[in-house]
Structure formats: C-alpha cells, structure tokens
Length: 389
Ligand code: ATP
Ligand code: MG
Image (tube, protein in one colour):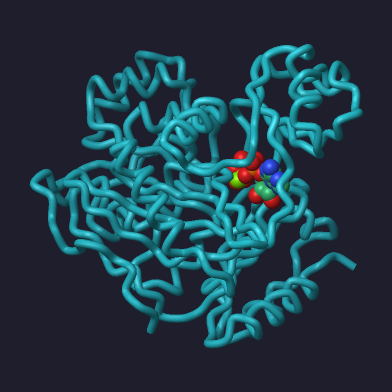
C-alpha cells in the first residue's frame, strides 16, 4: 500500500444530505453515469437533466429530464424534484446554474464552474493567484492574434475560450502562419493563444474539498494524450513533483472555496517545473482507474464531498493503468472483447453509447497489478489486439 494522501479525513459536515434524498446531475455523459452509480450506492436517488437524450447516465438514473438549459420552467421543475445539484460537465450555461442555485444548493458553485468553463477566466484567475502557467495571451481579433504570435514568437496553440474538450477547438500555429486564416478557421469570439510546451510528461491531480474546508488528495497519475485526447493514465509517475502539485492544488481549492472535486492537469518540464494546463471541477477521465485501484473512487469522493459525508480513504490498493476506448475501434464492428475479458486483472467499462464515432469515448479498461512498467506494456499489447484489422 502507498502512503495515505488524505489530510484531515473523517470530519463529517453538519449539513449531511439524508439518505433517500435526490441528487440532480446536470449532463448525461459517462461521468454522470459513474457519479450516479456512486450516489445510488450511498443511498441517494439520481435525477439527470440534459438537453440531449439517451446519454450514458440516463441508463442508470432514477429519473431523467431532457430539456434545453434555457428552459426556465423545466429548470424550476428540476430544482423542485431534487435536494442537491451537481454537474458532470462544466459547459452548462451560467444563467441556468444561477437559476438553480437560487432554488437548491449547487456544488461546485456557479462561480467555480463559470471560471472553469472559460479558459480566459481560468487562466486569469490562476495567474492572479501565482499558479505557474504556460505563457498566454487573450485574443479577440485577428489583429490581436497577429501581435500575440509575434510577441510569443514560438510554436503556439490557439484555443477557444469556451466549449473546448478532448483537444477540440484548438489550432497549432507557428509564428509565421497566417493569423487571419487561423482566426477565421477557429470561429470563436474569444480565444487564448498559448505557447506550446515541450514537456517531459503530463500528470493530473484530483483533490476534493468539503463544505467545512477539509481537503483530500488522490495520488497523482501520469497521462498520455494522442491527438489531444487522453489515451492512458498510469499510477505512480516516475518523476518528482507530487508534493508541489498538491500544494498548488490546495491553494486553488481554497481560493475557489470548492465544494466537490477538482482536477488539475499539469505539464511536467524536464527540470521538474510544473505548469498548470487546466482545471476540471469534477471527476476526470484520468481518475477512472480509482474505481478499482483506490479504496474510494473519485466518483464516490465527489458524492461524499457534496453530500457532507466524511471523506473515504484515497489510498491505492494497487498500481493501475487505464486505457480509453475510442469509437475508432468499432470501425469493423464490435472489438474482440474476449481479449480484455480473458485477462484476470482487467476491468472493462462500456458506457452504452449507441453510435461509435471516431474520437468519441465509448468506454475504458483498467488493468491492475504491482509493476507499473509491466502494466503499461501489457495495456498497450491488449489495446493493439482490439484494433480493427
Ligand atoms: P480535455 O478537456 O479533454 O482535457 P481540452 O480540449 O480542454 O482537453 P487541453 O487540456 O487544453 O484541451 O489540451 C489537450 C492536450 O493537448 C493536452 O493534454 C496536451 O497533451 C496538449 N496540449 C494542450 N496545450 C498544450 C501546450 N500549451 N503545449 C503542449 N501541449 C499542449
Ligand atoms: Mg485537458
């Protein structure tokens, strides 16, 4: 077992959500599905609200409401059905969050979500709190982009301020690329131009904070992205920096007074410097392995944090590697699942999405064991065997 990463654990809040209460979740993706299951395990009902139907979370929910996030009447009705509200993705219109927060507790708060759903606000907030970031400039016109490219004078990424995920809404640029063409292609009113970082590795840290201010941290993990989309997450990164990451994380959670989970994505530079890439105010794809590897999963910890329950232990029971299963694997029909099912240390998760599109997260698998290097090798071998021929 690894060292226990929890700080001030087992302090229950005064505002515990009674069993049998209803948790409202905004969004119906796989994160909502896994959060919903964790809430039900703890004795809560789950009501999902989304503007699209048939998301993975709707398959497990006790109740589902499909309405626009602009539909004030439907939002009022949703609030009347539930006792507590959370999100499973951060791109929810702020107005909807404010309407709901006037009626029922919303955790994390609309302010936290507002900051995390907008790269510009997020970067400005982090910068003002002294959190190290890649050099960036806020862009609102092609002329500003031209100046910023000239000023940063290095390979860069132009990222939309809102709505980006899985590397969408990003354009790689060189200083002599045409800024007017790039700005037209991005089709956004507001963006951030960020210097491309030549990192040693990427890592993420997941922390939770309760309403009484207690903070717990999961051990961090190393992440590998392919074409901007997370491919693997592995426990026990071989590089240093976890302590420093946790100190930065605590500072962020306290400054934002987060109630719930917060994920911090980091770039780790060859000299050990950490730069914060972005925040996610919710469970994160890189923490899926905690379902099997940790004494408490990230999903259960989220519910515990927002429902005012004491935190569970974040100790690892096992080393783990998680691999995402994208829609590309379904090109010639269903992948040969027996490859994974026949392996005694592998856990397969399929989210039940109807249509397998390239780049779409359809599921993941987690392999458990003692030796991370062997796990990484085996995980890649198994992944190769799933590829369409
Ligand atoms: P997600 O929400 O899925 O985490 P996203 O679309 O919000 O992703 P980012 O996290 O900004 O996008 O970028 C996705 C990946 O692209 C990063 O994890 C990293 O691999 C790469 N990337 C992003 N910004 C930079 C940068 N400044 N320098 C180098 N690589 C970068
Ligand atoms: Mg990211």
